[in-house]
Amino acid sequence: MLANGCFDVLHAGHVRYLEAAKAEGDILLVAINDDESVRMLKGPGRPIMPASERARILAAMTPVDWVIIFQEQTVGGVIQALEPDVHAKGTDYREETVPERDLVRAHGGRVAIVGDDKAHSTSELLESLTRSARPDECVSRQAGFDISSRGVVGAILVAKLSSIGDIVHTLPALAALRRGMPEVRLGWIVERDCAELLEHHPMIDELFIVDTRAWRRSPLSWTTFEALKTTIRRLAAFEAGIGIDFQGLLKSSSTLALARAPRRIGFDVTGLKEPLSAIFLTEVVPVTSSDHVILKNLRLLERLGISLPEKWEFVLPISAAHRRWAEATVRGAGGRFALLNPRAGWRAKEIAPAMFEAVSRHLKMQHQLASLFPCAPSSGADFGRFLVDHGIDGMAAPCSLLQFAALAERAALYLGGDTGPTHIATAVSAPVVAFFGPTKAWRNGPFSPQDVVLQMPSDDPGYYSRRRATGAYLKIEAPDLCRAIDVRLERSESARSRATVFNE
Image (cartoon, rainbow, N blue to C red):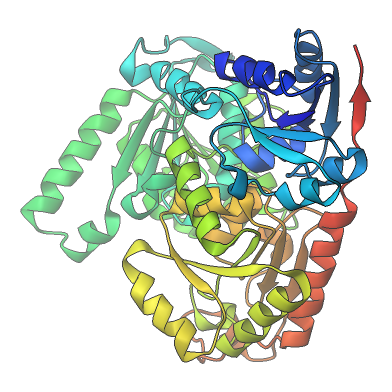
């Protein structure tokens, strides 16, 4: 018999599942996902325990005879190699919904649905524990952590107000800051449009949500005055000893001044988007122009004695509900899928709609992948008409930012330009093919050596400026996109290897 899963944090449901699987025959082999595939399936921050420890714990359980670790996101390769008589799945499946059922039947095996009702979930258990540990729902973290010879600080305020991609690129700095200074309270100030990425974040103690666009539209209104007054009061009450400006704009450095942070750290003038913002900084850090923006952000933390991490860590507050939504959407799409994103900040970052018609056809015919097109929740109908009008074989997928992240975790491929969803897909380790034009991929594009980037320069000076853009699409041809897709999918396939067997 074969049972499989992540088995990250064992609970009673796992035990009953394994006992029921063992009852189906004589020898029970348990296949567990390796650490990388768990992270791709469950998201950043998982697994809690490394695969070797999970394997040893399972091997010590009475029902279990053998344990193997496999690298794929599905157990299909193990089934083909071992040809089990019975493939046991939990009660969150029905026999007809088990993805590997045809592989099992092909060698004469059968699928068995075993265990108790799906009343236990590791993801929901961890989410509950995380919420119960948040400082605003229990005891606040203690102030007074000595971080340098300059004095004592109890709170640090991060200023990165927007955009979606910029916030994603600051998440590794947040993780390094939290792990390097676990006793300091961390706050973050963010625009309302991007706040979903940070609300209920396990590494943030207090989130300050602002709407500077509304303030600029009505600077003299009573509503703006009240909002500013409330924000300034909250920032002052947070008592930040240090403010870090990861954005390099007047609005970001000035918020640190409004918060009355004695130390306000930011980039030197060569790294600022708006050099005038330096007037609100007390300390500046030189940066290298050739650094990826993630590394550039991390270098600010060296001023606090925090070393550069060996691996960039992205933690997004993706909930169990977001992942259930993604699972339902995937079932509606018919199984394996690619995410295609035709939208970006301006036309020179986009490719012509006809390219997506060719790409979606190629994905279906050559790789048996359905094409999902993520869009804002309010624009599903309009996006559906866009697909019909351009003859694109795909399905609109209206979603929030974190629903998109949960969907990207499960995608066989993501295709898009330099835009927020592309950076979210990269953060959750989706296989990415990206096209860049006026912006530079080496600076803020995908950083995995497995991903494929098409960088297209232009002689048109307006191409490199949103304000002077001519309205022309990025000039990439469908055959080039299809070849890039083939390369990326082939790399995903070749990254898989045989399972490691544990027998204890």
